Length: 225
Image: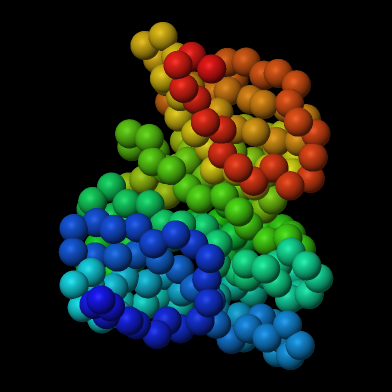
């Protein structure tokens, strides 16, 4: 019952997202395909890809590179998921991709570049595990690994609206939680759980949490817990 199958430029561990008749996802190529022979890191490319939902045809494919160093394809972590792990997010007009220290990129659904911005230069040997989310006019990015920051970007321009520091070992995608009629932005990091006003970045509360290196799962809230 296979409807279509499409070869991608390379592997990737992001989740595909769908908007209308388009599918968006990421992959990488040029380096780190074979752990026994990873190749030349200078040739690493990340791909922001759009496919036709009905046919699987690749409608556009933007190759994204950076001169900043990445961690080599070795060990037991980065080799598991590679260099394209962040899922895209869309508001139905534009689509946004977080590409680690290569930056954050915004395209129209038809593939026209709107803006790109750096959110930090540091790489990590385990790679990236967080995806951007939308909140009103803001694109919120957990760039803990790249710059030890949680950032809210203007989704129209990419300019920073607010930022907060202090996120050791945080690989989780931020969560918006409804609390007594208002919204809270909750992010977990090693040893501390923090909540912010998503509109202006004001910290609302924090508490002790799990101390651990691999804090990847996002926070889940339900029935006031």
